[in-house]
Image 1 (cartoon, helix red, strand yellow):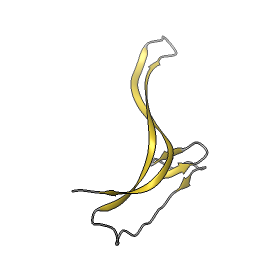
Image 2: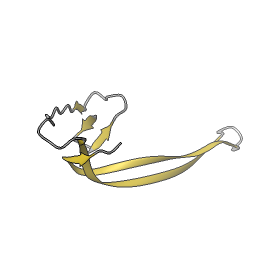
Image 3: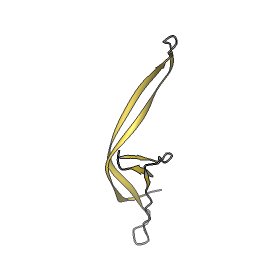
Image 4: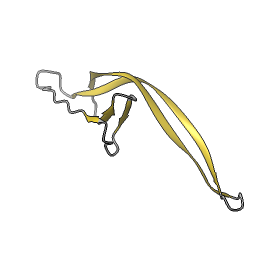
Length: 83
C-alpha cells in the first residue's frame, strides 16, 4: 500500500513521488489458525457520473462513472479468515 499522509490518500496503484510505502510484518505463529491482519478504517465512498462532450460541435463523446474512497484514520487489526 502506498500512502500520502498529506492528503490521507491510500492506494494500491502506482506510487506517486511524495507517498511513502508501508510494509508491516507480523508473526502469527502464536495466534489461532486462520488469523490474518488487515487495515480497518471508517471509509466514505463517493460515486461520480461524468459525460464528455466534443469541443467542436458539443456532441456527447463518452460517459461513465467512477468511485473515490476517502479513508479516515486507520489501524491494523486481526481477523479470523475462513475457507
